Image (tube, rainbow, N blue to C red; front, side, top):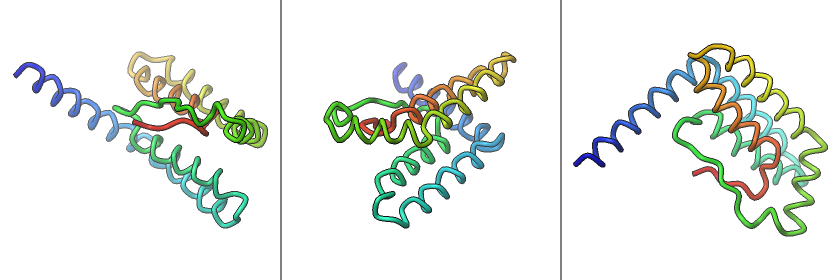
Length: 134
């Protein structure tokens, strides 16, 4: 019974955090990532990168209660090559923006949970290939 109450409380806190995140700018981040994903998917070469931007858009929309896990795909030569290309083309800038936002959010106690979510987004923005959101 206690485990059920804890699970429901965790779900409620995640939903409340996601609602506050969306209202304070998370929806804009998600929309920009989704728009970038659509633009990249217009070309055949850009489809894998567009899919990674959609992954970032989902995490940017619902970061509370989500975790980023690295799978074995990134260890292969194709995954490593795609991550290096991603990093050189724009991943470093996306991660830097999220790190800057995290540092700004961390200046206040109220902003600490949001800073943690930006750190999570920065981690995924740095090397998205081979990562899954759970």
